[in-house]
Image 1 (cartoon, helix red, strand yellow):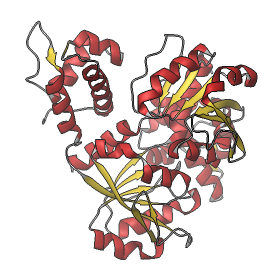
Image 2: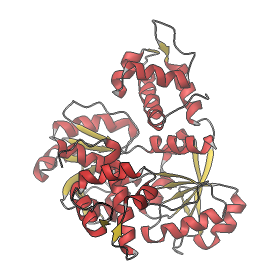
Image 3: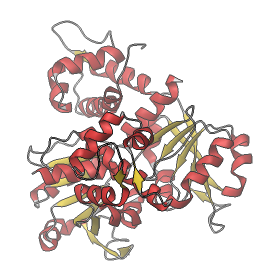
Length: 208
Length: 208
């Protein structure tokens, strides 16, 4: 598990997992590097390197790999068997969608509460998760004992809210707002940036 | 504009744009590579290479670049001054959020209609955009003359719907469903994959 892993590799592991789950659903229990290489559009050499890190014992030379074993090893590597608790700030359209998204369970993420400024939704629930007032952010974060936050607020207030989150003990932020967050070095930020994905999408379209 | 651009570069351009827009909002009109290098966490050399592609004439040697000119060149390069029309399939929580998202205008994307199977929402509107029945997909796509689709359907039906989209003339798919789509080679797919972003996020958290 201690081998050096690149971000590109990390990003491929959920894709491997999806392909393997599809194979298992189709009743396929053995897989070779060639099939995975075609499914992921990377070289067979790369497939072997990728899987060696996650599942060093699942291959026999000249043969194939066990689909179930690979699935288990990938889930373990990706932390899907653990539960990472998080709060969500900004219960607008996107925030509500994230609170209601069923798929996070599979990925080891549990959103335990939402925060918003709108009094018409605070005190209520979205998908059985309580929505608290943003004015109680500091107290509630300490009470809930979480250090992971998902941010889906309006752009103008995002940096200010991120500053408050950090002051309240949040250590890692999954940011859905298309702005560049300024945070201390010890704080983890992962941007889920629609603009970036769209830029790549349009570039592919315009290249044609 | 014809220089070879890597996907990593393409992904950085919206980030440059956000940083430059923030600078302009703060009244700053000149910027040098060093500042951008720090903001984006890439080398100054890389900043110069990146911007040379998009805006070859915006720098003076030993001096700085014009923020407004860079913003215009980045917007042009990213296609934000054009309007790319798209339909959206799957008006659930995520689909509704995407239909209601105000920011797409800035990115040159206009979602002109939604499609769903649920008769309680077809015939209605979300954010003033009409929601049509999935059973009219083929006719409506031809009527609307679009070839870009955003997919936010339940996982189980996604591949089937994607096949239908392609048969109806869709050429490019922005996929929000965490599955591996199988498409002909001439079809463009860009995955906006929560699982991949989350995998990177948890990896960064667990490394600490």
